[in-house]
Image 1 (cartoon, rainbow, N blue to C red):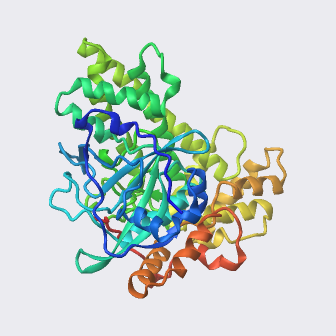
Image 2 (cartoon, helix red, strand yellow):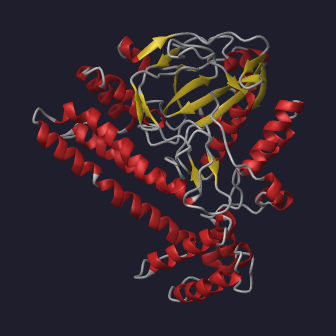
Image 3 (cartoon, rainbow, N blue to C red):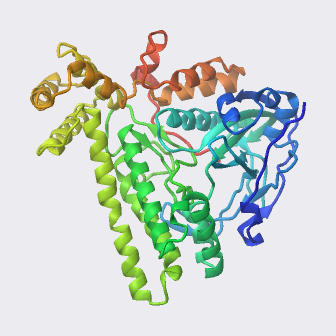
Length: 491
């Protein structure tokens, strides 16, 4: 059997300044540890063939499949606010693009596949732990309904990588609508290459915003489209307690997908200032800062697009500011609508925002678990005697006072208790990729070559809204000695 990828490569047809042509570096002894079979089918690939030794060699970068046009993409970026004019794919190679069963063009990229011209003295490799983390979290985000890159496969290479110590090497096969970032535009803007910016913008419009083809002001409309998608995306992050951890402009996707799962994490106890990333010493990318940083990143994109807005600089800046001005309202509308759904409100009334904020304030003060508070609130919607939500609060009286007001508010709506509970359970997950669970999975894999915990966690997280009695323990927050205080970048 031969592995066949029906590649149709549009990005590598752009000018050579957009990328470097480079093949993955062969590895010693690739072994497939996980194939995402449903995703393979969606991409028009044969999962049975991908699970063969030949498939493992391709997914590890040892063999380049027919039709691939491997490249490392060029981009720049602001990293923690500091601009770096050249970054690029330092440990990733884009094999090519396929059209999936829904007619959507998807990138297939190998992450951890060896050095490229953008590696900046790095080894271009990935350790097993970060590969498993990205697989787990990206697929969990997909199951939660949040736009995201996805994971097709994870392969161990039979080689070690050196970080603080020697660790098993691995390669992740990442699937994305594209890997074009704000930093991709910045790469050309800093070089004052307006022709390349226009070429890139036209490519993005055709690929991600085809409804804008023929628009009177297509580049204005493109900025507006990216602003809207990013505002909605970050609202969705906050609604599930997700912290990206490293929202640099080179990690901000033009398509509106979550990309680059490095030191990411989900909150346990609700804390707006929560930071997990070991490299975010100043809290720039803390949970509650994410909307502000998203707008900051979008402002950098707007700066790149200004030459396409017209020759009159002052008008171009004013137009960009008007478009960026829509971010706050778009985000707020999406976030508040999501919060109303989380507490079981079907309509909008005066006082709802204050009711929701009072709950969040009480949760923060009482170190209530973010995920379980909302999930158990759904139980209380169906059965007022249920007190598991109350149990999340250090001072249960703080919940009692709020719950009284909440019951008064929900009584103003016509839905039945069962309808309200079902609606709340449909938006409030019970299972998230908790940090201590991910770390336990990584330790079992790295130390014992045991992937059974990984398989089980991925299985549970594929149905985050469903009660799964056999796996109920996966919903539990960590015990004090299980808490993960820091997460780390995979490089």
